[in-house]
Length: 586
Image (cartoon, rainbow, N blue to C red; front, side, top):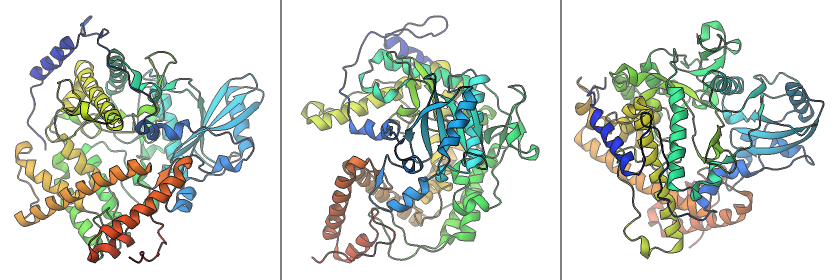
């Protein structure tokens, strides 16, 4: 088990000094004050932010064509588009959804319904009642996870946060965790909170406003961290989970419980019909081992040899799933040692699954957080697995956060306008990371201790990759296991039960370095094409993205070494699965 208890007092003094140096005064036991040094304002419209909020801002009225309610209209895909659309298609009775909303809020009739937002995992509608009041309806898509549990858990999580922890989230008016209803689909009906997404104001926030915002986020997290859950898993109402499959929570009038985890990785494809250990768990070691046990069971039953399709690192020959099984078995030999010896580091903690710009709503015209939305897929897991920074922060998990104010690159003055804007955005994210860390040090010391656990980034990385499905790309799981053996002696007193030969280590770390380099190239390509890894893009950008991707495929083919050309052409990541087109004649 992880050891090496840390003395945090010196670091807490550093955090205290940071706030003093930042121009912040401490009142009533480290209360915040306004800093007076504003940062220069940046222009809006950056593509980086657009990609983060496109789905939520793509509000589409569908009153004229009900079919647009059922399918994804906010994105196009430059490859496998039919499959992506099927994954997101959900049909329901529009009129009955309106009737359900009318009944839930005790109104006379629903005047209008429009598609308000959509993402890969849910479709959101705005229903306007006869008196002008509004109701938001969320319907999960087929790839959101188990629809019954996903819906029941999201509804219970929001109600628990609002009623028990007094955190500002939308009020749930009603929900149905079954499609066996008049609507024909699972749904949640909730309050509409008229806040502005943080994305709309992020680039214009002053330093004082950024600091205050981070303090608010940490305040909200502290309320959640302070609650002691009795087990690990997902949150539900007791009525939705059989007694033998739950651990009851006494708070909240006995209405809530912890049941099986509903994270979609535990239910994807054939896993939905497999007998897997999905919790609830009372032992943190089970939380660490369960993702690997899940993938070991699936790969043993369904895994087939296949070539690797990693970008610029494909293989011609098939890779056997036996190699994946062997690596998962090695992981399970070390998994119990990954749990810290300090009991508080395994505290069951509920965290928001995606604390990103679109999910943080501000009161219009202010810097006050109105609400945190979209709690779908939230789970209760050990603190050392949950510890981390908001999704919008710029954090390197391989190193402890510095308390030094980040600065622009040395060549900033020589950059062109586009690169300067990118540098400005990155610097702002780095500052947000610093302010969040410093605020956590003041108000949520338990989280600070977790963030400073030795090897935390490596451990979380390893746990994450042990839960990845079999796809013949084992480079990162191998590298994570090698990395663990490298830091083992400095963290864990017991001898490491796994080992690698020096030759294997060199080969694995070389492959990992190549993989990282190729991923950096791919990241640049995705940014320039304006697509995600599935090839998804805004409909207005579809034609451009498709044409440029086709050109890039030809370019990579022509520039490759002759013995690799056909392999690169065949393994191109942005092609339909049934694409057997021959390469161009040079």
